[in-house]
Image (tube, rainbow, N blue to C red):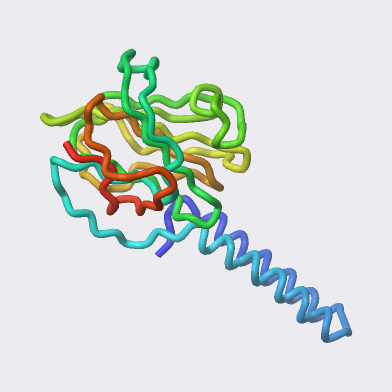
Length: 215
């Protein structure tokens, strides 16, 4: 299964793949060159297909847990001052996605979307200290009767488009599709101070399944 954000790119890649290989077959006499062109273009096609894959995830719905919004590796767990929405200290958990990770963003909790905003910006590498404040990003806040959390999609040096489906006022389900980041980057989650964290630095997590915090 592929994410809908990849349909046009996948279709274009297939057309280009067929065009290149048909042209090579018709115009090139050397068999080894035809094989080389096919192999290289096939690898690129596979990379595009795997990037936009959207595997089915089974989320154990639980109002007392926060699940990872994306696949990747935990690179930050620290207390910071969140100055865009809460304007107070929060626990930040950051998950870095490599180009080979699934790039679907999922809602970490059940609740109501209280805030959703897009910010244009730079494309610093995702692990840069200023990336969360200066890069292209979206900020989403979801609230329920137990907790309110903020998660932020952050573009990186390769990511040139962030897609965010969260709309203020809508009710969302834990683990449901909330967006997509094209070609890499990271997601920051901001939790209330004192929230028990269920992950450690460098731990790999799966979006919609791995519990990153207990409420």
